[in-house]
Structure formats: C-alpha cells, structure tokens
Amino acid sequence: MPATILVGAQWGDEGKGRVADWLAAESDVVARFGGGDNAGHTVVVGEKVFKQHLVPSGILHPNVVCVLGNGMVINPVNLIKEMDGLRANGVDVSPERLLISTRAHIITPAHIALDGALEKARGDQAIGTTLRGIGPAYLDKTGRRGIRAGQMADVEEFANALYDSIEQANATLAQHGVEPLDPQGAAAVYVEAAARLKPYLRDTSVYLNKRLQAGARVLCEGAQGTLLDVDHGDYPYVTSSSPTAGGALTGLGFGPCHVDRVVGVAKSFSTRVGGGPMPTELEGELGDRLRGTGEHFWDEFGTTTGRPRRCGWLDAVVLRYAAQVNGFTELVLTKLDVLSGFDTLNIAVAYQIDGRRYDYPPSTMAELERAEPIYETLVGWREDISGARREGDLPEATRVYIRRVSELCGTPVRTASVGPERDQLVFF
Ligand code: IMP
Image (cartoon, rainbow, N blue to C red):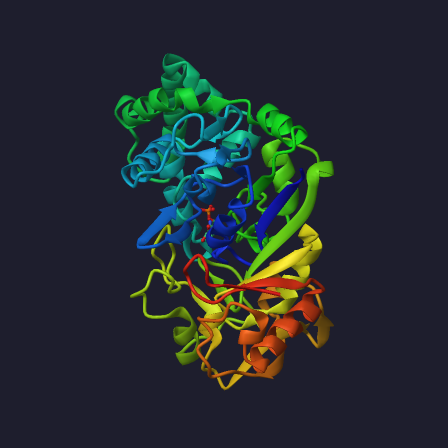
C-alpha cells in the first residue's frame, strides 16, 4: 500500500495535527520527517486536549506505529517529558509503538543557548524563532559536526559528544556576551534522557521500506509549512528544514514510487507567527476577530510559544505556490467555522509589485515586502456551520468560497473542518 504525505500549505499552524489524527485512523504507520519541538500539534479526543511537539499525532491510535524520522532534530529531554505526559494519559508509548531514527540529529543545550544569542544579535532583523535550538542543530548537521540519535546507544560516547558540543558553543556564546554553559551540569539531564531512549533507536528507513513493501499504509506527517521551507519559503524568515513533500522522502528514506497522495492543509484564512512578509495581514479589528481572544485553545496563539499569531485574509497566491511546490492531490481547509459572521470575505488572487501582476510569490524579500494583494471579494455567511457534516449542510456562500479556493489554487478541496472536535469534518 502506498504512502500519503501531509504538509502545511501556509506558514505552519494550519491545523495539521487534527488532520493527521483523522488520516492516522486509516494508517498503519505515522512518521514525522522534519523539524523538532518547534512544532505544536493539538488534537482533541473527547474531554482531553493533547498538545504534542515531537511525537506524531498517530500515537493516539492504538494500532499505529509512530516514527521520528532521520530528517528530524530531537531534544531528548523534551521527548521524554512528552512521552511521560502521554503515558500519564494512558497512551502506550513503548518501543514497539515509537521508533526513533538512529540518523536523526540531537538538539543540545548549546543549540538552545545559541538560538537565543543569535536571535538577539539579529536585532530588528530577528526571525522570531521558537528558541528551541532548531537552526543551530541543523547548522551542525550540515556542517558535519552534529550528534546523531544513534550515539545515544552508548551513553558514555553520547556524554562526551555533548560536552564537546557545549565547549565549542561556549566560544561563540562568549562572542555574543552570553555566560558560558557548564558542560557537565547542562548535559546531565540529557544523558539521563538518552539512557531511557536507547530502546527506541532503530534504522527507521529500513523499517519503513519493509513495512511499505509488506503493504502497510504510511502517513508522513509534516510540521511547519511550505512558506517556512528553507528552500521554498520566505528566506531568511524560514525554519532550517524542508517541511515540503520532497522533505518527506529525504527525511524518511524511501523513494517517490511509494507516494500516491499529497494532502495540503490550509487554514481558511492566513496566520503567521514570527517575522517575515505576510501580504494579506490585517491589523486592527478584523485581525483581532480572526485571532480570537486566547481563551480557547483553538484561538490564534502559538502552541509552542504562546505568541499571538498575525492574522489576515486567505492568500491564494501562497496556496497556488504551495500546490505547485508539493504537488498536492487534494486540499483540506481548516477552521472554516471562524469565517461565519463576516459580511464579505476577501481572498488575495494575485500580488501587484511596482505595477506588475504576480500570480506566484516573488523569490526576493525586497519584492515580497512591496507586494500589494489584489483581492477578490466574496459574499460572507452568517450561519453557525459547526454542526455541518455534509456539503449540503453548508450555506451556498460557504460552498462558493470553497469552490473559489479550489479554482484559484488548481487543487480540489476535499475536506473542511468546522470545529476542533474529531468529527467536525465535512467531506466533498
Ligand atoms: P525555528 O524553526 O524555531 O528556527 O523558527 C523559524 C521560523 O519558523 C519562525 O518564524 C517560527 O515562528 C517559525 N516556526 C517554526 N515552527 C513553527 C510551527 O510549528 N508553526 C508555525 N511557525 C513555526
């Protein structure tokens, strides 16, 4: 059976967690392929709200095996915390259900300290990172001096590698006027976590290929989003990995022949957290209305950092581009219910930059920062749609909105979410 790739079509936070939870019910294996605990996935199961940063949402389905792939950067201490939290909620996180690639890279205390120091040094050019050490960990990976998860198998070797990493980072930290870390003190809790993670280490590429050949259904669960991709996103306001469909293959170690479905997840409006361009951003009352007050977990405040997200109208230029980069076979639109009550709804259909029309985002920051959205205005709807389960339950104006999104990005919208509960989905 083939693999499905699930990726974010915007700047992350599209609601991939709940879509992954839905698709996991039809999967045997769910595998994360990139990023680390910069991600935050929220899944609601009855009364319980699960907020996960590293472990794929699939863990909530008892028959699913979860994989942390080689493309990831893993903070062992935070992984242990998350596993303990899941266990406390009755979720089985035994080594039969959770596999960690020996080729994944480790985030060290040095990476976290460096992330903070480098962000501070950027001043008003700060990227607005999640301060989880993601960038510095990938920098060490591509610089061929990183620590791989497989090294946790030998706790002494792992401890020594950690001390070296911290000592090397101390020189850079000193240049930025940051207090050096005490290698032994900072590493102790990491070494403890490594000893507990040892039974989970596997060659996950071999495992996934065997399962695929035996007919298993594999869901590749993306984190972040297309516009945060280090190659295809708004560089330099990006993360340091490849959250796009191509990244799923390099981040898990199997070939494209196995993939037959690429699901893009887009929120029904735009949000972005951190710095960087966002042509359809709304300030003032409209933006506040889309964001919500923060009293509900589904309001637009970061799952990982708690930061308020920037909000704006749906940007079809971004979605068209994401469909192209990832080769979407279908699109899921999330949080459609939040758009109820607006008299009119705008969708950006193109940008205007220096008098020229752009159907795709330009690649330079200078051009993007001058981009003016060209809007198409649609009639809104007043009805509460949170109880809709079939296309026919939706008001005509909602259906027109969805059809227009499909046309503008050349990808069929097959599913929409109309609330946070597992069953609040409408299929088309
Ligand atoms: P980093 O991944 O922590 O280095 O952050 C780089 C950029 O990506 C920042 O703008 C972050 O806000 C953004 N980012 C990273 N992970 C996520 C995510 O899961 N959702 C939304 N934005 C993210």
